[in-house]
Length: 82
Image 1: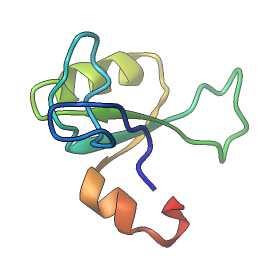
Image 2: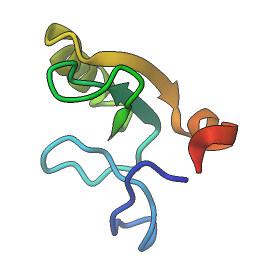
Image 3: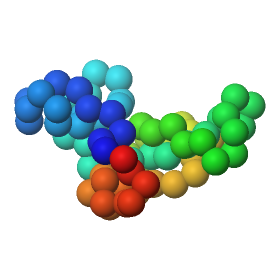
């Protein structure tokens, strides 16, 4: 399952980057969790293109939210992805 899919130039269900205003194809999944709001095992996801991966990772990391960064293809291949 794609963590978040939105209409994009690549098609109606192509995953796009979560960075504000970016319409590029997503390449990365940033799995995160806000410990004040979510249970420890819960994973929220943002998608990132190559250009915005570091910026979004830093944003989540500075807050202690980032748990894992994985290529989208690998994330979708996981048994628990759906």
